[in-house]
Length: 73
Length: 152
Image (cartoon, one colour):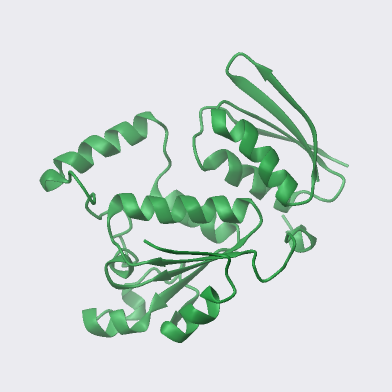
């Protein structure tokens, strides 16, 4: 089980969502994806996408303008 | 890397699809079409884009980014200003959005009647992006199985 890091800091709509989806397509079941970003709406929309894909959010953290989301593939 | 995504195609019901007619060749409207499409793909939907008329003209080689603004184009000055602001806001190019669209499994259909009217041959078009050359029947077949249908 791999841990995949994804950095979309500074990127705007729709890149954070698209990059998460690309990473999920490449990941194997069981892998964990950790994505860090700064685009405000993506903090709530990435979990929406993960829910729609019937996958699990392991955690959402926020520090200043940066958020970090962990996703279980 | 191998795509292990086959099991990750959502509810898989007939409703999990978006079909968009891209009739406009305006720069800003192409952004709307591709951003919505990429968002839908990212959230697990299938997406079909049906390019017709002025929209199809943007699929000619080298033409993707060349459309005017739908408003305030001002002989190119408005577009220049908007593009500058988009760069500042770190908005990616239409080319990047189109590449992501393909990478996430989106399909692009080209209207063959527009090709006849405008005298465009497949080799004039971005064949790397186009899935199929077709007519209204294909659009309806795509749209009737879609929960989201838009005309842009």
